[in-house]
Length: 478
Ligand code: AMP
Ligand code: MG
Image: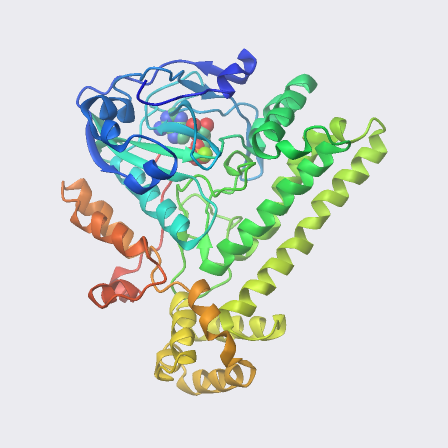
């Protein structure tokens, strides 16, 4: 057996999923295999790159030991309830145990219709597959918990979007694909057994130490809240805007999932939003912590019967648990900005900085990478020139210098990336790939694999877009 699948989710009751095979891909082709990830999770790289391996990675063939299934879930999308969502274009092939003792899902995304497809065609176009590959691998390299990209493949079938595009599959690796929306699915059906079974499954998989502990569901809820608070703080620090923080896109293990219309801001603005379908700015950069807490409240509702037999006491426990979000988030964020600026914790200074950055169109990533370079002896112009108003830039830098602690310069390097997946670079890479040229994609991937290391030959990737290069909108690509 080339891959030692062990499929715990497939052993859950039948109402948790629909078992079915991916659509056969008539002409499977490998675009990119993630060797480093394959090794990390204990897979045989040579087999994956073989014809049989590529057949599995594109959905053309079902490997021995794989039990493909589409997971059932529901969710709140932009605040509105959807009673049934589920994997409409994804197949969980199975799970593998890594040499690190971590169990991981291997899932195909873009692999055909399922009972959860509704009106969709079950496919993915090449662009969104490569986009998820680039950005999720950047997140991993930047140290942010995320689902990952094991491979990108071609199916040989074209898919119709605004134009006809090559059909592709992303092979996604996750610590599990259980979402807030998975709990909501059972809760909405008044399936208390389903909720409990799922909670026990999650405990077994992610927090086995608390399996026998009294009050374990409360601890589980606390842990999920804590993981999300830490995660969203990291997003904020990178200027990352997820774009579709629906409850079905919030994963219980605390990894970033679903890279549909996400984007990183160039010029700082707290209200930055890129997704073409986010008209009200619900998922704007500065709204993300509030939305995460809202989603966690929806999760906590599903937990109530598990928390206490007395309904009032259960509500109190749930409130306290979700209430910890803002505390954990603020502590994490303050600590992160302390390190990013190389100063003692100072939320007021951070807020004043954000106001100046907004007023003066300062690039978020360049401010921090510039400061890091100044802290290591670089020229003031690296930061001053980022401000449209040079006097304001000089004054701000002087204020920073008063607070800056030289000892902290080395910490700054580790939290201030030099490279991020800038929208215009991603766009260019995807457009070239659609024309059959993967050079820009491959190079961008190489740049993003080491976001904290300056490399002379990649200097152009540090730059923000020229006015005519700015990408104003991103699309789900569904
Ligand atoms: P997303 O916006 O990717 O989080 O997807 C929301 C829901 O729509 C999920 O149930 C997806 O499986 C489903 N979906 C998205 N795109 C497609 C598609 N092309 N075909 C079928 N279902 C889809
Ligand atoms: Mg989704």
